[in-house]
Length: 162
Image 1: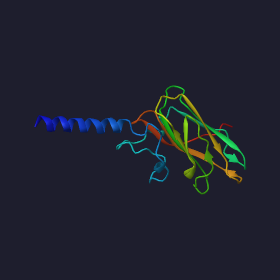
Image 2 (image 1 turned 90 degrees about the vertical axis):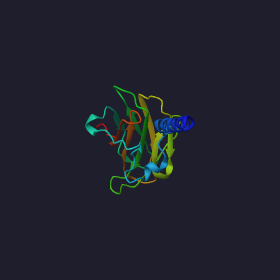
Image 3 (image 1 turned 180 degrees about the vertical axis):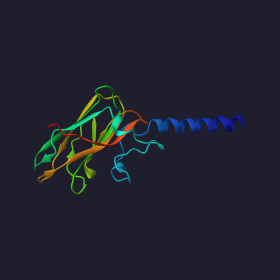
Image 4 (image 1 turned 180 degrees about the horizontal axis):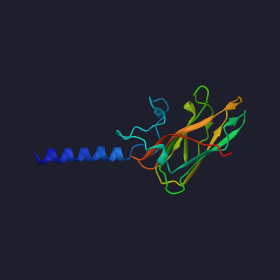
């Protein structure tokens, strides 16, 4: 009986540790197409209230032409964040457009114009570089910023300073 309890305890601990470490290498590509896109599936957790979001997300522009590159900066002036998942979208059609450039801190999913973190180390600032499609139009950037596994803000839209 003691062996069964020990095995059950070890198996339970394994699953708890795995759950706590979920997505340390960035959000999975299926975050693009879930019923609530850009939201993590973190064991029944819910996003925080938008009014409590301590992070600043800014885009250098919301208009593009062929060859343009737009920066999207995520900044935590008062606290660090561990992860993010953002997409470039057309405001008229909601379709994914453009592609984010990958770098050591950013994983890119060209299939759905998404960018995510490559590790879950604390970050104060991350700058994403988005490449425009071969067209002229408008874009907005929407996604999630994760302070930690259970504390995150979804449907965050990058603002464009005027």
